[in-house]
Image: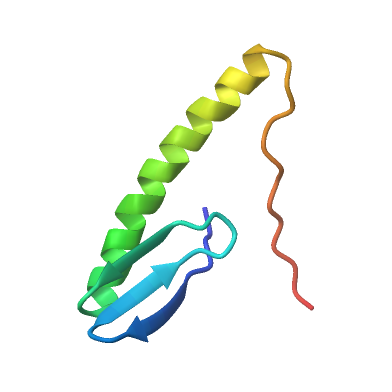
Length: 71
């Protein structure tokens, strides 16, 4: 899976955020912020998969598909 992450610095912290899902993390270094982001995103993804399964069982629409295009 490919995720775009924006990183910026706030004070002494680097903030990593995926603008699509809103998953956010922080770290004292860029590497730490990205490592923390990966962990946070994996947890988010696991819960999103469970949410989709429950919706599918009820016959409700599931999540949309994200497609990356070059412009």
